[in-house]
Length: 462
Image (cartoon, rainbow, N blue to C red; front, side, top):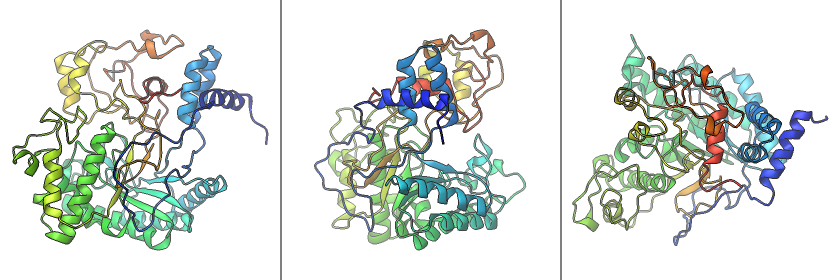
């Protein structure tokens, strides 16, 4: 089959982007030897690159038409970097077909695909990505379809982003007239069914239950939820999906969660309250004089700033674990976290200049599509972090998180500096006050943000 002119333009830009540049990622140095889980991927495994989003291809074409070769190359390189494939709907027969096609295509190129299952009933607390299967029974039948499509393929499976971190009991108002506690038990059972079904049927898969991010649940709380959902029977858990937390902080948090699981399963069963975390950093190393850690800075065991110093927490786990070794591994999404999270207060300054009323509205919600973000570490299984199996691009960078709009006439921000074909600001709708427009729906290509992510990548694209 021939390649269309549009496709040839995309491939040409992609070649320019990738010339002499590896897409496998940048490893973090570590003096520690990684532990060996029951089954794992080799370091430097080739991760799967799915076909680019049609919106990415169109954006590359548009940029080339405007003779912006540099930005076209950046977007092309972003789109041709290994990233996950999401499965969010369909009948059991359809998802079986789609999964089979994906793993077959990846296998033909000797690549390992990352698959995201995102169809649990009542997902996302009726927010931007709400939806999911119509019932627990329908979901479990859908999972059976996933299992059928997988066969015995080698794959990374991420089960239900935010599914455990955003349980129905966390947002009962999103389920009016329903028993949130019953829904919560159903949710946990669904995730456990997905995990155990895949683990038992495909010995070559690595299953990770999603556990939110390092700025959300306490370590003890999320460990309890993971344990209820059967994390002990799978490879581990995933972190930072579709979020922006620093990779270093995610590595600390993931290690603490794994250590908490080891402690509550093997040392003092069910004692989640003794698990240290970012909300209080006390431990033997700092004479139990802890503070809350600052998520807007990079943590370390040697930081001079107490709000960034993790030594107390690290020593706390060493003291309670003794010779017990943590076994739960994790993967982290680095698709959009190169510049870390933006504080809402940053949007009060130039170039956003939002009034206090808008900042308050943003701070009170779970904002999405934040400007100022950049791509993070390239996907790799050579992480250099003992319990981190891989850094992945789980969220497809360039796709919108949802329509992150607030009511009222918020000031439009002129983002033409990121739009090389002279976006007409008079056409902007003042719905998203930070972008000065109505954001695309969840999963739809967002060219303005896509270009910014590529331009602000840390480490940079070439």
